[in-house]
Amino acid sequence: MPSPDISTPSELPRADRTDLDLALRIADAADAVTMARFDAADLDVRLKPDRSHVTEADLATERAIREILAAERPDDGVFGEEFGVTGDGARQWIIDPIDGTANYLKGIPMWSTLIALAVDGVPQVGVVAQPGLGRRWWGATGHGAWTNTPAGDRRIRVSDVDDVADASVSFQSIGQWRDYGRLDALERVTGAVWRDRGYGDAWPYMLLAEGRLEFVAEFDVKRYDIAALIPIVREAGGTFTDIDGGDDLDSLSSLATNGRLHQSFLDLIHDRLPETS
Image (tube, rainbow, N blue to C red; front, side, top):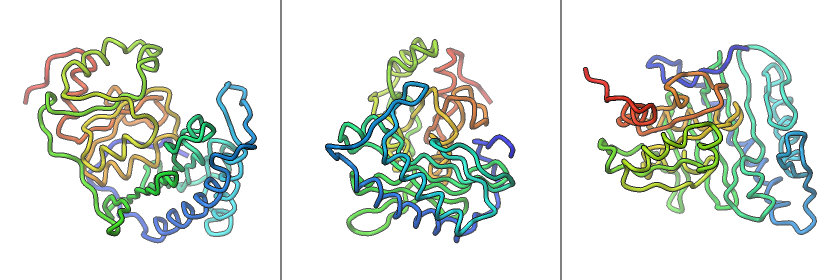
């Protein structure tokens, strides 16, 4: 299986609508599992070897997702946060059953289930389900990016802000940037923009896809943390790379923008003069 590509090539094949429909049905099943145990007083919580938390709901949700995929896409590979990689080939489902487990176990509704399908190494289908807030976002190559609203499903698009000084950004956490030796870069970015906040996890990427932010970046991200976000941001008109502008999903960093400001933010992060044509 090639390392998934997070660039935005101009000629990707149109995704199979049946794969998107399946991903949405998987999200329905996952929502039922996660919400059944959300904010439960007796929720079982344990520490993994890396000292991160895992709950019974993380495990049960990934099992439920894998059962559906085994029945409906038995030839596809699966990579999940909790149970690793099974299968091989050109098609791989990439799953994070609960992105934001620390919020989930605290009863804070800012967590998501992330479901992606990568084909030939490129994430083509993505669903972000945030049932604690009754929200969902989805996208697939050639099918646009969408979200649910009380008035019905709505197609979403990144903003047309074209000046860094007018941009609103989310950076996850100060400590994360400090730990990766990029605190000076964060200070340059936040000092140059209109507004900065650390919203955290998948939600800010969806705010970007809806046109409410212009920049989201973070470190220490795994393939399952961001694969589902990529088709949504890309289909909304945004750009998604790693923090250095590269296209490797396994580089442990991510940078999503509204596209118009991508190069400007790269220049700020790396403290270089803007590129000229």
